[in-house]
Image (cartoon, rainbow, N blue to C red; front, side):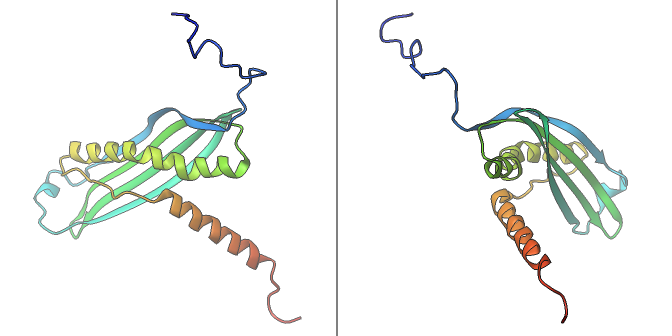
Length: 170
């Protein structure tokens, strides 16, 4: 197997260190899942169109050196005139490995790219939880995490810029 043409045997990388920027998912997991079906079995016969409420939040923290945890929290509920049909709260986490990234790139990966990667898996957990509660699966619409990240950065920059302006007349 170690023939002359073996590309893997001699890459001649110089000092042997990998200094290229890199980021990726190490593992992903359900950190917390709560499913409530508070008005069963009556809620299965409700005829009114329910109001579906969906909220999400993204958190990140450093675990150890180059390893961070990203947590995507999704809360959804189906409510109608008679009450709540179901409520699901999911905290979906991932361990993220990053090295040789500038601070801005690392922040963008943690708060925009990682949630984009995790969302389809979290979406499936929510759909399965709603289905297992006895309702049709809730298929969450795709979320533009990158667009939301840019909006939040712009809002923060505007808030920082207006904070320095004088108020009133001196």
